[in-house]
Length: 316
Ligand SMILES: [Zn+2]
Image 1 (cartoon, rainbow, N blue to C red):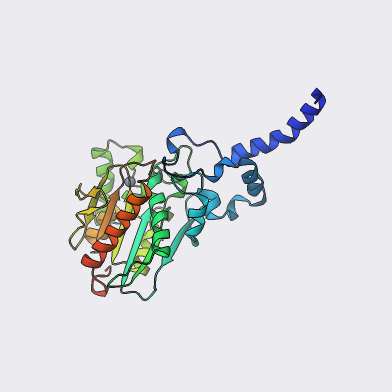
Image 2: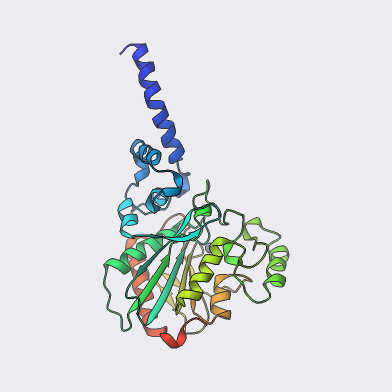
Protein backbone atom coordinates (compact mmCIF):
# COMPACT_ATOMS: atom_id res chain seq x y z
CA UNK A 1 0.00 0.00 0.00
CA UNK A 2 1.44 3.41 -0.92
CA UNK A 3 1.76 6.27 1.55
CA UNK A 4 -1.22 8.16 0.14
CA UNK A 5 -3.48 5.19 0.84
CA UNK A 6 -2.05 4.85 4.34
CA UNK A 7 -2.86 8.47 5.02
CA UNK A 8 -6.40 7.96 3.74
CA UNK A 9 -6.88 4.84 5.86
CA UNK A 10 -5.51 6.51 8.98
CA UNK A 11 -7.82 9.46 8.37
CA UNK A 12 -10.80 7.11 8.28
CA UNK A 13 -9.84 5.04 11.32
CA UNK A 14 -8.52 7.69 13.68
CA UNK A 15 -11.90 9.31 14.48
CA UNK A 16 -13.27 5.85 15.36
CA UNK A 17 -10.37 5.16 17.70
CA UNK A 18 -10.71 8.57 19.34
CA UNK A 19 -14.43 8.09 19.81
CA UNK A 20 -13.78 4.74 21.41
CA UNK A 21 -11.31 6.33 23.80
CA UNK A 22 -13.83 8.98 24.76
CA UNK A 23 -16.62 6.54 25.30
CA UNK A 24 -14.56 3.97 27.16
CA UNK A 25 -11.57 5.65 28.76
CA UNK A 26 -9.10 2.97 29.64
CA UNK A 27 -9.85 1.89 33.22
CA UNK A 28 -7.14 2.53 35.79
CA UNK A 29 -5.24 -0.67 36.56
CA UNK A 30 -6.89 -1.44 39.94
CA UNK A 31 -10.41 -1.45 38.46
CA UNK A 32 -9.69 -4.65 36.55
CA UNK A 33 -12.33 -7.32 37.09
CA UNK A 34 -11.60 -10.15 39.48
CA UNK A 35 -9.45 -12.96 38.19
CA UNK A 36 -12.44 -15.26 37.82
CA UNK A 37 -14.45 -12.85 35.70
CA UNK A 38 -14.88 -12.88 31.95
CA UNK A 39 -13.68 -10.06 29.69
CA UNK A 40 -16.09 -7.17 29.54
CA UNK A 41 -17.58 -5.25 26.66
CA UNK A 42 -14.93 -2.53 26.83
CA UNK A 43 -12.75 -4.83 24.73
CA UNK A 44 -14.91 -4.01 21.68
CA UNK A 45 -14.30 -0.28 21.35
CA UNK A 46 -15.33 0.24 17.72
CA UNK A 47 -18.76 -1.36 18.11
CA UNK A 48 -19.26 0.49 21.38
CA UNK A 49 -18.27 3.77 19.78
CA UNK A 50 -20.90 3.44 17.08
CA UNK A 51 -23.51 2.50 19.71
CA UNK A 52 -22.57 5.58 21.70
CA UNK A 53 -22.92 7.71 18.59
CA UNK A 54 -26.45 6.42 18.08
CA UNK A 55 -27.50 6.97 21.71
CA UNK A 56 -27.08 10.38 23.37
CA UNK A 57 -25.95 10.19 27.01
CA UNK A 58 -29.41 10.95 28.40
CA UNK A 59 -30.96 7.88 26.79
CA UNK A 60 -28.18 5.36 27.51
CA UNK A 61 -29.37 2.02 28.82
CA UNK A 62 -28.11 1.11 32.29
CA UNK A 63 -25.77 -1.60 31.03
CA UNK A 64 -24.23 0.79 28.49
CA UNK A 65 -23.28 2.98 31.43
CA UNK A 66 -22.01 0.38 33.85
CA UNK A 67 -20.58 -2.61 31.95
CA UNK A 68 -16.81 -2.22 31.79
CA UNK A 69 -16.79 -0.06 34.91
CA UNK A 70 -17.80 -2.60 37.55
CA UNK A 71 -15.64 -5.61 38.43
CA UNK A 72 -16.99 -9.06 37.59
CA UNK A 73 -20.07 -7.71 35.81
CA UNK A 74 -20.39 -9.02 32.26
CA UNK A 75 -22.91 -7.60 29.85
CA UNK A 76 -24.90 -10.84 30.15
CA UNK A 77 -25.07 -10.50 33.93
CA UNK A 78 -26.00 -6.83 33.72
CA UNK A 79 -28.74 -7.48 31.14
CA UNK A 80 -30.14 -10.31 33.28
CA UNK A 81 -30.72 -7.92 36.18
CA UNK A 82 -33.45 -6.02 34.30
CA UNK A 83 -32.72 -2.69 35.98
CA UNK A 84 -35.62 -0.24 35.84
CA UNK A 85 -35.14 3.52 35.58
CA UNK A 86 -36.73 5.40 38.46
CA UNK A 87 -37.78 9.02 38.10
CA UNK A 88 -34.93 10.09 40.38
CA UNK A 89 -31.64 11.38 38.98
CA UNK A 90 -28.21 11.84 40.47
CA UNK A 91 -26.70 15.32 40.77
CA UNK A 92 -25.10 14.66 37.37
CA UNK A 93 -28.44 13.62 35.82
CA UNK A 94 -27.93 9.85 35.71
CA UNK A 95 -31.07 7.82 36.51
CA UNK A 96 -31.14 5.87 39.76
CA UNK A 97 -32.09 2.31 38.83
CA UNK A 98 -34.03 -0.22 40.86
CA UNK A 99 -35.20 -3.77 40.45
CA UNK A 100 -37.99 -5.48 42.37
CA UNK A 101 -38.04 -9.26 42.69
CA UNK A 102 -40.70 -11.45 44.31
CA UNK A 103 -44.41 -11.15 45.07
CA UNK A 104 -45.47 -7.58 45.85
CA UNK A 105 -47.79 -8.72 48.64
CA UNK A 106 -45.07 -10.75 50.36
CA UNK A 107 -44.98 -10.67 54.16
CA UNK A 108 -41.36 -9.47 54.16
CA UNK A 109 -39.91 -6.50 52.32
CA UNK A 110 -36.14 -6.23 52.05
CA UNK A 111 -34.23 -3.35 50.48
CA UNK A 112 -30.69 -4.02 49.22
CA UNK A 113 -28.49 -1.00 48.52
CA UNK A 114 -25.14 -0.97 46.73
CA UNK A 115 -22.67 1.72 45.79
CA UNK A 116 -23.70 4.50 48.16
CA UNK A 117 -19.94 5.19 48.17
CA UNK A 118 -18.98 5.47 44.51
CA UNK A 119 -15.45 4.11 44.85
CA UNK A 120 -16.60 0.86 46.46
CA UNK A 121 -17.19 -0.71 43.06
CA UNK A 122 -17.49 -4.28 44.31
CA UNK A 123 -20.55 -3.36 46.39
CA UNK A 124 -22.57 -2.57 43.26
CA UNK A 125 -21.29 -5.72 41.57
CA UNK A 126 -22.42 -7.90 44.48
CA UNK A 127 -25.86 -6.26 44.46
CA UNK A 128 -26.17 -7.04 40.73
CA UNK A 129 -25.11 -10.67 41.28
CA UNK A 130 -27.70 -10.96 44.03
CA UNK A 131 -30.46 -9.61 41.76
CA UNK A 132 -29.72 -12.48 39.39
CA UNK A 133 -29.72 -15.01 42.24
CA UNK A 134 -33.00 -13.62 43.64
CA UNK A 135 -34.65 -13.67 40.22
CA UNK A 136 -33.32 -16.93 38.84
CA UNK A 137 -32.62 -19.28 41.75
CA UNK A 138 -35.75 -20.07 43.61
CA UNK A 139 -35.09 -20.67 47.31
CA UNK A 140 -38.04 -21.78 49.40
CA UNK A 141 -38.53 -19.28 52.22
CA UNK A 142 -40.93 -19.77 55.16
CA UNK A 143 -42.18 -16.23 54.47
CA UNK A 144 -42.11 -15.00 50.86
CA UNK A 145 -39.89 -11.95 50.35
CA UNK A 146 -40.34 -8.94 48.13
CA UNK A 147 -36.90 -7.57 47.33
CA UNK A 148 -36.14 -4.05 46.22
CA UNK A 149 -32.62 -3.58 44.91
CA UNK A 150 -30.98 -0.18 44.42
CA UNK A 151 -27.56 -1.39 43.25
CA UNK A 152 -25.88 1.87 42.17
CA UNK A 153 -27.00 4.69 44.47
CA UNK A 154 -24.12 7.01 43.61
CA UNK A 155 -23.54 6.71 39.84
CA UNK A 156 -21.69 10.05 39.62
CA UNK A 157 -19.10 8.85 42.13
CA UNK A 158 -18.91 5.42 40.54
CA UNK A 159 -18.43 6.68 36.99
CA UNK A 160 -15.86 9.29 38.02
CA UNK A 161 -12.31 9.05 36.67
CA UNK A 162 -11.16 7.84 39.10
CA UNK A 163 -14.28 6.71 40.98
CA UNK A 164 -14.88 8.63 44.17
CA UNK A 165 -16.63 8.06 47.45
CA UNK A 166 -18.74 11.23 47.38
CA UNK A 167 -21.53 12.22 45.00
CA UNK A 168 -21.45 14.83 42.23
CA UNK A 169 -21.47 17.64 44.78
CA UNK A 170 -18.76 16.18 47.00
CA UNK A 171 -21.15 14.90 49.69
CA UNK A 172 -20.65 11.63 51.55
CA UNK A 173 -24.18 10.27 51.07
CA UNK A 174 -23.79 7.96 54.05
CA UNK A 175 -23.56 11.00 56.35
CA UNK A 176 -26.51 12.87 54.81
CA UNK A 177 -29.47 11.02 56.41
CA UNK A 178 -31.67 12.95 58.85
CA UNK A 179 -30.57 11.54 62.20
CA UNK A 180 -31.80 13.59 65.19
CA UNK A 181 -29.52 16.54 65.97
CA UNK A 182 -27.87 16.24 62.56
CA UNK A 183 -27.41 20.04 62.39
CA UNK A 184 -25.33 19.93 65.54
CA UNK A 185 -23.64 16.53 65.34
CA UNK A 186 -22.78 15.94 61.67
CA UNK A 187 -20.79 19.13 61.01
CA UNK A 188 -19.01 18.87 64.37
CA UNK A 189 -18.11 15.24 63.76
CA UNK A 190 -16.82 16.15 60.31
CA UNK A 191 -14.72 19.06 61.57
CA UNK A 192 -13.39 17.61 64.81
CA UNK A 193 -13.22 13.87 64.23
CA UNK A 194 -12.34 13.68 60.53
CA UNK A 195 -10.33 16.93 60.32
CA UNK A 196 -12.66 18.13 57.52
CA UNK A 197 -11.87 15.09 55.40
CA UNK A 198 -13.42 15.98 52.00
CA UNK A 199 -14.32 12.32 51.51
CA UNK A 200 -16.58 12.50 54.56
CA UNK A 201 -18.34 15.84 54.07
CA UNK A 202 -21.91 15.31 55.33
CA UNK A 203 -23.45 18.02 53.13
CA UNK A 204 -24.99 21.41 53.98
CA UNK A 205 -28.10 19.88 55.57
CA UNK A 206 -29.73 16.45 55.94
CA UNK A 207 -31.20 15.07 52.70
CA UNK A 208 -29.58 17.89 50.73
CA UNK A 209 -28.77 15.42 47.92
CA UNK A 210 -31.11 13.86 45.32
CA UNK A 211 -29.61 10.42 45.95
CA UNK A 212 -30.34 10.45 49.70
CA UNK A 213 -33.78 12.00 49.11
CA UNK A 214 -34.55 9.12 46.76
CA UNK A 215 -33.49 6.48 49.30
CA UNK A 216 -35.40 8.28 52.03
CA UNK A 217 -38.58 8.38 49.91
CA UNK A 218 -38.10 4.70 49.09
CA UNK A 219 -37.83 3.88 52.79
CA UNK A 220 -40.97 5.90 53.56
CA UNK A 221 -43.11 4.39 50.81
CA UNK A 222 -41.77 0.83 50.60
CA UNK A 223 -41.44 0.43 54.37
CA UNK A 224 -38.81 -2.29 54.41
CA UNK A 225 -38.56 -4.79 57.27
CA UNK A 226 -34.84 -5.02 56.62
CA UNK A 227 -32.22 -2.89 54.87
CA UNK A 228 -29.00 -4.42 53.60
CA UNK A 229 -26.37 -1.87 52.61
CA UNK A 230 -23.23 -3.10 50.86
CA UNK A 231 -19.88 -1.36 51.27
CA UNK A 232 -16.15 -2.17 51.15
CA UNK A 233 -13.26 -2.67 52.05
CA UNK A 234 -13.23 -3.51 55.77
CA UNK A 235 -14.21 -7.18 55.48
CA UNK A 236 -16.76 -7.29 58.33
CA UNK A 237 -20.49 -7.10 59.04
CA UNK A 238 -22.04 -4.29 61.01
CA UNK A 239 -25.56 -4.15 62.35
CA UNK A 240 -27.90 -1.49 63.69
CA UNK A 241 -31.43 -1.74 65.01
CA UNK A 242 -33.68 -4.36 66.57
CA UNK A 243 -33.38 -8.13 66.15
CA UNK A 244 -30.43 -10.47 66.57
CA UNK A 245 -27.67 -9.62 64.09
CA UNK A 246 -26.32 -12.26 61.73
CA UNK A 247 -23.12 -13.68 63.19
CA UNK A 248 -21.70 -14.27 59.72
CA UNK A 249 -22.48 -14.03 56.00
CA UNK A 250 -20.13 -16.20 53.98
CA UNK A 251 -16.70 -15.44 55.35
CA UNK A 252 -17.65 -12.09 56.84
CA UNK A 253 -18.16 -11.97 60.60
CA UNK A 254 -20.01 -9.52 62.79
CA UNK A 255 -17.92 -6.71 64.21
CA UNK A 256 -20.00 -3.73 65.21
CA UNK A 257 -17.82 -0.76 64.52
CA UNK A 258 -19.84 2.15 65.88
CA UNK A 259 -22.23 4.74 64.53
CA UNK A 260 -21.91 8.05 62.73
CA UNK A 261 -24.19 11.09 62.57
CA UNK A 262 -26.16 10.98 59.33
CA UNK A 263 -25.36 7.38 58.37
CA UNK A 264 -27.98 5.07 56.93
CA UNK A 265 -27.40 2.51 59.69
CA UNK A 266 -27.84 5.16 62.36
CA UNK A 267 -30.94 6.61 60.72
CA UNK A 268 -32.67 3.37 59.73
CA UNK A 269 -31.52 1.11 62.54
CA UNK A 270 -31.41 3.36 65.56
CA UNK A 271 -34.05 5.97 64.78
CA UNK A 272 -36.54 4.23 62.50
CA UNK A 273 -36.39 0.84 64.14
CA UNK A 274 -35.67 -1.25 61.05
CA UNK A 275 -32.72 -3.63 61.17
CA UNK A 276 -29.84 -2.49 58.94
CA UNK A 277 -27.18 -5.01 57.96
CA UNK A 278 -24.08 -3.23 56.69
CA UNK A 279 -21.82 -5.49 54.70
CA UNK A 280 -18.20 -4.45 54.32
CA UNK A 281 -16.69 -6.54 51.52
CA UNK A 282 -12.95 -7.20 51.83
CA UNK A 283 -11.95 -5.38 48.63
CA UNK A 284 -13.42 -2.31 46.88
CA UNK A 285 -12.17 -3.19 43.42
CA UNK A 286 -12.64 -6.95 43.30
CA UNK A 287 -15.73 -8.96 44.18
CA UNK A 288 -15.55 -12.14 46.21
CA UNK A 289 -15.56 -15.24 43.99
CA UNK A 290 -18.96 -16.20 42.56
CA UNK A 291 -19.35 -19.13 44.97
CA UNK A 292 -18.62 -16.88 47.93
CA UNK A 293 -21.17 -14.27 46.79
CA UNK A 294 -23.71 -17.08 46.52
CA UNK A 295 -22.89 -18.34 50.01
CA UNK A 296 -23.35 -14.84 51.42
CA UNK A 297 -26.72 -14.64 49.70
CA UNK A 298 -27.83 -18.03 51.08
CA UNK A 299 -26.68 -17.03 54.59
CA UNK A 300 -28.58 -13.75 54.26
CA UNK A 301 -31.76 -15.62 53.26
CA UNK A 302 -31.34 -18.04 56.15
CA UNK A 303 -30.82 -15.31 58.75
CA UNK A 304 -33.66 -13.19 57.29
CA UNK A 305 -36.16 -16.00 57.51
CA UNK A 306 -35.10 -16.88 61.05
CA UNK A 307 -34.71 -13.42 62.60
CA UNK A 308 -36.61 -10.76 60.66
CA UNK A 309 -40.30 -10.52 61.39
CA UNK A 310 -42.99 -9.45 58.95
CA UNK A 311 -45.63 -6.80 59.27
CA UNK A 312 -45.23 -6.05 62.97
CA UNK A 313 -41.61 -5.07 62.34
CA UNK A 314 -42.01 -2.70 59.39
CA UNK A 315 -40.30 0.63 59.36
CA UNK A 316 -41.93 3.30 61.46
ZN1 LIG B 1 -18.66 2.67 52.23
